[in-house]
Image 1 (tube, helix red, strand yellow):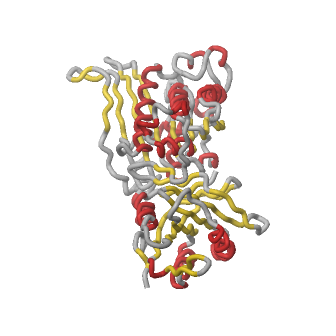
Image 2 (cartoon, helix red, strand yellow):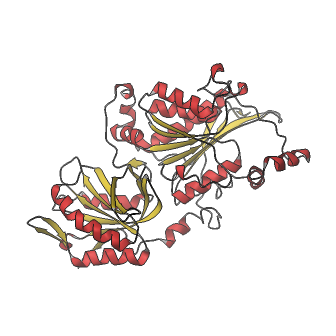
Image 3 (tube, rainbow, N blue to C red):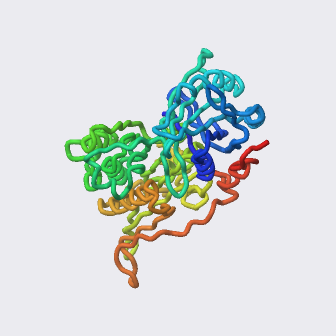
Amino acid sequence: MSTLKFTDSDHWQGIERHLAQVSGARFAFAYTRTISNTAAGPVLEVVETLLVDELDTTRGIDGWYLSDQVLDHVHNHALATGYGIVEFHNHHHGPPGFSHLDEDALAPTVDYCLKLLGGRPYGAAVWADGAVHADWWRLNGHGRVERGQFSTLTVLGDQLRVLNATPTAEERLARQVPLLGTRAQAAIATMRVAVVGVGGVGSHLAQGLAYLGLRNVLLMDDDLVEITNLNRMVTAGYADIGQPKTAVTRKRMRAIDPLGAVATAGGLTVTGEHPELDDVDLIIGCVDNDGPRNRLNQIAVRTRTPYIDIATGVDDATEPFALGGRVILTAPHGPCLTCLGELDAAEIARWAKTADQRELDRLHGYGSGSKNPSVVYLNGLTVNAALTELAAWLSGARPPAQWLDIDLIGDPSRPGTQVDPRQVAGPDPGCITCAGGNRWREAHRPQQAGAELSQ
């Protein structure tokens, strides 16, 4: 899967406003950083934009031309920065797609730019009626040009948008489209989501995603179903004991939506790079240990991918006992889990040890080796709170809460179940994981982002 990520919504808003102008042809360029470039296609992040002034475009007999000044500027900047290039232009009628004139102009442009970029991919996109079609080109190992279509073009901001999602009518989802909107439902059907951990919490989540219409889902876990899972793992029954949790969860999701493209993989490892997470549009962690949680946080920061962390917990050693959970959403340029102080260094260190080392720790009193209590209603409530925030984000109804605290006990002054958003501070400038979020952004701040280039 290949994707083009606008991790700063201002970049896309500037391009879209520019392309939506009614007079003549409009052009814009995005400079990109390559996150990965595998057999499935490139994953690129937009880091700068340039809007081409109308005075720098000329209409000829066989289409529109850009001035040499603009082209020289674009190419020289890409060479100086090491960025890739994606060119955008508008059509005044949809659906978006490359015309015969576009194809004729692209052939020499692609050849020139691929040689210029020295192995970095080149992209071109057409905007029309609020939708986008975008393709990528690259040289393969034999020096031949490969071409493909970006699977997703995402914009992260107060709303999570998938620009190239195609609206579809499906009777099964007819009752929720009025709430979410056709564009959000199309985004749900198009985007790729990774669910890491499909036990008590993750099984609720996977089932909820299937009901919402998410079809391109990666399930990651390496555990087998045990009898003690059956009080809360909603995708499994007695007949599934001993089966991989991913397999039984996939079976349940396919029962809800036979068209779902549900893939499975093993769980996280201490040293693995996990390239299967490089090309997803959203990572959702449902793990019960800060070791894999830290690994997911690192991967999300590296791949510039939004991450939702869902956690539940029961402490029956206190009086009254504690019963609750939390949902945290992190995104590029914002605070990560390390910034928020949500990762236990000792727990991360224990996860990184070998099984023999962990057993030795238990003999010396570090870690009990026992599993905490867990109940189905706590998992269900926490997961559905997370799905509510995801739906709000996709629909644009409101910005999602970045942190939800869930307390099923309450206190004497306010007894009962509480779901409260927490105020989140900005990134930690000294964060060892994301370098303070904004520090990365400052280092790549465009000199002419959002400004038009004129003569």
